[in-house]
Length: 196
Image (cartoon, rainbow, N blue to C red; front, side, top):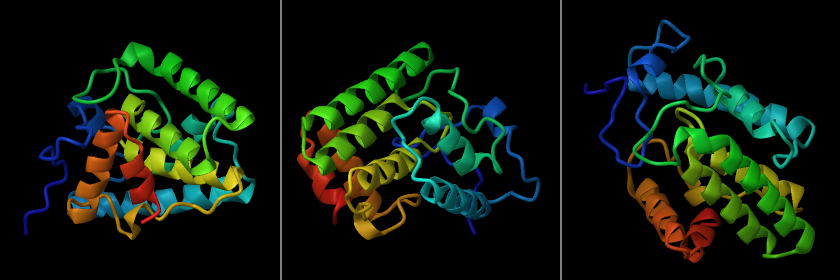
C-alpha cells in the first residue's frame, strides 16, 4: 500500500517544511490516512466548539483560535501564522495585515449588504484560502469559516460538493477549478460548487 505520510504531489496543497513536519504531536502517526483521521477528529471537536456559542469569525483572533482548535491536538503550530514562504499564498510578512483587511472588508460587506449572503461567504472563504495564513489546513479552515459566517448571516451551511476534499478526486478537482475561477474574479463557479 502506497500511503506516504507527507505527499507533495498536489500543487494545490500547501507543502509542509521539514521543521513544520517535526511538530506533529501524535507519535503513532506514520501513514497519511492516520494523519487525516487524527485531523478529522480534531476538526469535529472544533466544529462542536464553534457551534456551541455561535463564534463570530469576523472578531479579532477567532480565526486563529478556530485553526488552533481544528489542528491543535495534531500540530504544535496550529493557530499560529506561518513564517515562511509557500508555493501559494501571500508572503509571510503580509499575512497579519491581509487577514485584518479581509475581516474589515467582510464586516463592511455584511453591514452594508454589498453582496448577497452566500456571495459574501464565498468571497470571504476564497480570500482567506488565497492568503494561506497557516502552515497547513487553510482550505479546511476557509470552508469552515465560510460555513460559520453563513450561519451568522442566517443561511444554511454549505455542502462543498458533498464529499471529502482531502483526497484527490473529481470533487476536489472541481473545487480547485472553482477557486482558480475566483482567482480570476469569477465567483460564480465557487458559489455553485459550495451549494452543490
